Length: 365
Image (cartoon, rainbow, N blue to C red; front, side, top):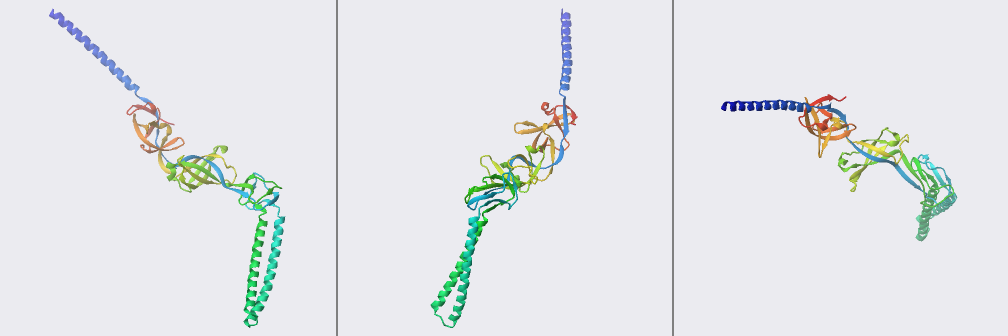
């Protein structure tokens, strides 16, 4: 009986060992399959060092370099208006004329008054010279000499008064002709020939379009990077991909307390007249000279809360690296910290990676 029990126990033990061996073999096969499944296909591209210029991007508007409202300094009827809206004028061009008949007569009257005063002064000087000689010889009284001296002073004052009055009338006559104070374009014409204008009436508005000003704002965090003379590049929708250039000319003294932005202006040449005031612009303001920097495709970057990371490939293993990104340059991102030139960065497939995962990589073309 004992013999049968022993044989039965050995049989059961053998079956258990056989099952364990089978399970062990299956487990190894499954582990092998799992390990094989963890090899992930990716595409890589080497981190490059390129010479790039730091910049700030913004949007802006083109405005006239100067805008002048021309007013009348004389009263009367406009006898001639020689310009219209949209006309290009040079500095000093005659724009309009006020009827000058009354002003010309006033000048003639002033000239006659001056001539009379000068004749009177000349006669008084002759008499003063004669009585001055008599006074030295004691042949006239002191009162007589004082009287002629006073008359001489009054005659001289009358001449000066007449000269001043003549200058005023001539000045008023000159104001009947209205000239362009700057070169530019007539933006607005508010009068026509035959209109009766008063002193101070607005007649024209002239804008200067060469050069133009480019007005835009930058965030307060970029304010310390700004310097007058920096290069400004911009595009406008009406000229497709053509790029225009200017120079930063004005930095406003204070930050807007509502938008937390700083307004700046650039001077933009416009000799061809292609650019127009009021056009919307996309601006790139270069804040420093070109410098060598590490760049990778923007598609390589992964964002997790406050962190930015990339995956690199070392042999056939993925490595996670936390980096600090700088400025984007088209399809490339500047890497300030965390990468070295030549490191193979995963640009496709990184979403499926984690630290230490095996990869099969191909180089991007």
